[in-house]
Image 1 (tube, helix red, strand yellow):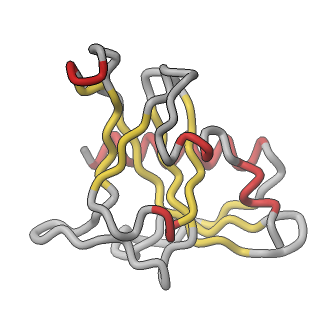
Image 2 (cartoon, helix red, strand yellow):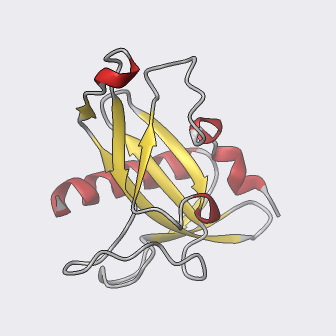
Length: 139
């Protein structure tokens, strides 16, 4: 899992740099955020990067399935993201591949999010953040 997480972080860094965002990474992995991202206006965002590769079967929804990403952190006891320490969750679905750029406040009360990137008609509450890189443009 740690290896996959490092891979997702590197993919995120590359995507952010390609969008003219500056990326700063901390030493070590003990902080609640994986990186800081600065936009062209100089605004800094604290970002947590998460990802998944595998789709979960979902027979209740006609078998289309869904992608689930655990947003909680902690080795022993999982705790929700703290939005005083994280501004944005960058969630990556490797199989598609696609990014969801989600404000922390929209996920901080849950341990897991569900995404439907393979379903263009999905009305999932987080689908509005699909490829939502413009969130970094806010000042």
